[in-house]
Image (cartoon, rainbow, N blue to C red; front, top):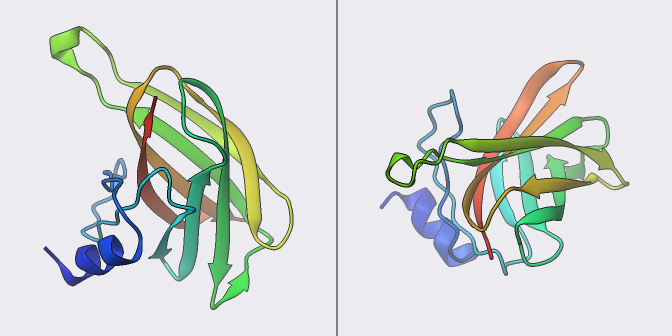
Length: 144
């Protein structure tokens, strides 16, 4: 286990970090859906993500909190992508949905994401400024 993974598990608790599609990243993070947030440093922007209630199939209100150098990031475009890999053995194609989050003040971005079914979902929070991606972080959650 890398130092990053051990410190993340100690600091946070157990949702397995997921693959960010198209981006190789060896900085795995872990947390649980009951933890208040999973925080990670991505390109100088600290991104915390959580669901505002226990994740379920259907609509889920989510929150991302962004900080850079300890200060709230208030001028970003933030989106969250939920992805469940294909399961050929169950004849299930990949499922995914993306939702934009609205800034509600102090670097807190909120929106509602759609999970098509219960199970383990890969979550990617993407942060852009002026149309250019400036940060992203991977999380995962388990919908009941």
